[in-house]
Image 1: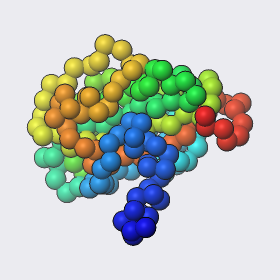
Image 2 (image 1 turned 45 degrees about the horizontal axis):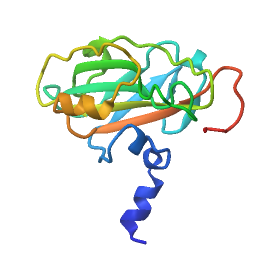
Image 3 (image 1 turned 90 degrees about the horizontal axis):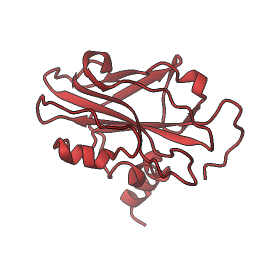
Image 4 (image 1 turned 135 degrees about the vertical axis):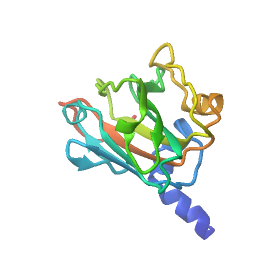
Length: 179
């Protein structure tokens, strides 16, 4: 087994199948920091719906505020991980975010909708894409069955430059079954 292969296996976005179900394989080239309920979001951490009522604070690294970014937030497991026939459910879409700033400086195309999973543990994915230029992005007609890859192709965004995901289950939900 090569060293490269071992490294890829440990990537939480690969292990959790976020890469595969939502995103194509990519290399992180920009720092993406997401905070919700006063905590920094790290891959695989857990939040209850009451902790994600308000849109997260999103900070984007990079030196160049002339670079523009698009942030996509989707639920990979709607309505349930065992039958995700609404995958992906679009929770938030922001474009034209200048590098070294945050989502608040961008243009909100689809307003934030807080996750309300009713069954199972859902993966909420925030993907960041570098835009080739400032461009008009149309809001999709509906939130369900959004396709991040297709959206990226449509607007020539290429592969993600960063991503993070967290797990969310209903307030009373217990335990670990993801399926």
